[in-house]
Image 1 (cartoon, rainbow, N blue to C red):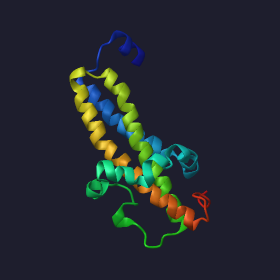
Image 2: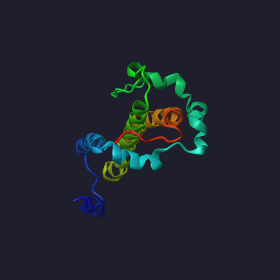
Image 3: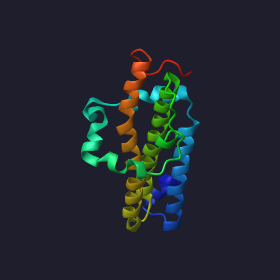
Image 4: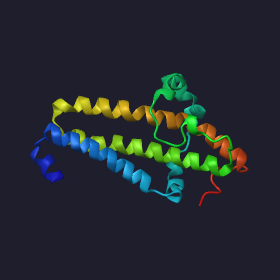
Length: 167
């Protein structure tokens, strides 16, 4: 069906496009939440902090993250209001793995929007782009901004390594 739509260049109407956008969000969430901690650990090399990110400060410099990150709704038990006062190695490792899960979920939504853009009416593409970027990019930026501090904390607690305790 997908190949036929692309070959015939018949765009979807607005209603099926909206259903695809919503479905892609649920599918992204399902995929990200289906991954256990061992699988998320294997994804760490993809999501780890890079040198060019300057320990997350790049996001503060460009996007002024500190000014708005507290205003982004969170469904995670690891938002600032719920952070544990008892910071253990296990807690930091779980935080890092959950931050990978969150970033993966938002990145999947962005990735799934590409074929939706191809299939949707061109008059609706700008709406899809604005929605996808405004709803997901800030969440990805927050994960990228916060992760370096937790990586450093994990290394300190776990004697130089990030993941050692969670199985």
